[in-house]
Length: 142
Image 1 (cartoon, rainbow, N blue to C red):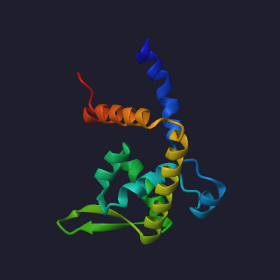
Image 2: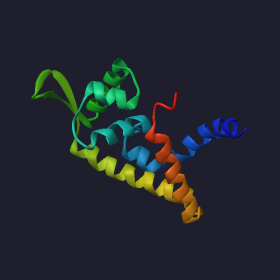
Image 3: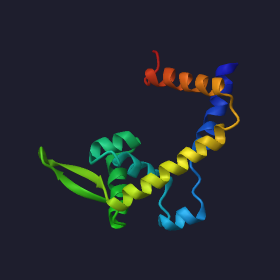
């Protein structure tokens, strides 16, 4: 069945799209995990409440606190009080973190370009349409 084959392929596709950090970048970025880089990528758009960041990362708030603690210890994020509600903690990326995110996005783009380089344009357009259709109903049709 096609759905069974899709389920078999999904983990491999996810792994294929992951950025593989080379030794240079891993050393430069002091062995940050890909998960930490994804968090920094999310913060590149601007400060985020801790709760929102955790929801986007799909992790618990305690795991998010530990993640932010590790990033803060490296000077990559800072905690700020929300001017609209002082009880809310905002997490903001540092200037160094934003530079790292820029490099990380370049690596992601290169990875994707390499992975999809041999696909004809019409196949790539079909893939984009499929992704858009799937993401248009993220909860799934129930």
